[in-house]
Amino acid sequence: MKPLILFLLAAITLTSCTNYGKKVKSSNIEVYYNDGITEEQAQATADYIYKLDTDPETKDNKKSFQLNKDGDTINCKMVVNEEKFKDIPVSSFEAIGGLISDNVFDGKPVNMVLSTNKFKPLQTVYFKKLEKNGTDLSTYGEKTTFENVEVYVTKEASMEDGEALAQLLNKEMRPTNIISFQLTKNADGLNSVRMVSSEVKAAKISEQTITDMSEKISDGVFNGSPIVFEFTDSQFNTIKTFTYDPE
Image (cartoon, rainbow, N blue to C red; front, side, top):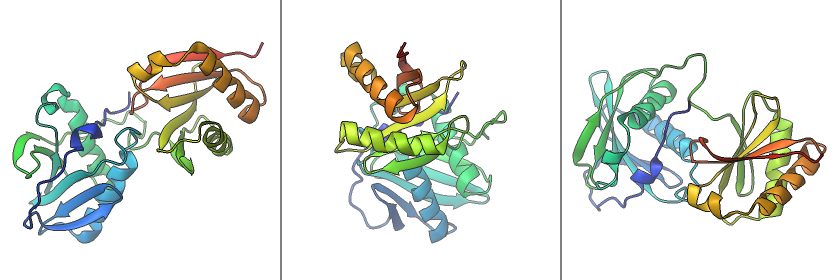
C-alpha cells in the first residue's frame, strides 16, 4: 500500500516574519533552513516535496516547511491546518519523513514537526524508517508530462504508452490545471488508467461519460484492447473502478 501523503494540510499561508531562516523554493513549495542544513539540501527537499505533491486541487497552493538539524537528526517543520491534522493517522506523517530521509538525507532520521503558520510546534512525529518490502515507496512510477496532464507509469506498463496517454488525455480534456494519472496493469494484466479525483466528483460522473473516455483511450493508445479506468485519491488509492471491454 502506498503511503498517504496529505499535502492539503500544508496549504496555509505562513505569517510574515524575517527570522525563519534562509529560503529556497520549488514552484509553490517554500523551504526555510537554518545552520546545519545546506542550501543544496534545502533545495533538494523543496524539489522532492514538489514532486510528491500530486493533488490537482491543491497543487498550486503555497506550502511551507522549515529544516533544522539536531545532531544527526533533521527536524522538518510542516505548516498544517490546526483543525484537521489530528484526524490524520500518524503513519501518514511518518511516511513523509521516511521519504525525505531516503531521498534527500541519505537515510538520516527526519522528524516531522507539525506546526502553526508561525512554525510553532503542535506535534512531533518521530522518524520511523520505511518498510519497503521490495517496493520503492518513494515514487508512483516514472512521470511523463504533456502540458497539464501528468502520467505516472509503473514498471508493469510501458513509458511509450504513458506518453501517448498523456497527449491523448490533454487533447480530450484540455485541463486548465494539472491533472494526475497513473498507468499500470491490474492482476489480470489489463492496462489500468487511474485518475486522481475525489469520492464526490467520481460519484457525479456518469457511466456513459466514463465509457466514452475509456473508448477513446482504448482506441487511441491500446489498439482497441480492454482497459480498466479507475478514480483514485491523491495517493492512487482506488475510489471507483470501471472496466471497459469493446466486445
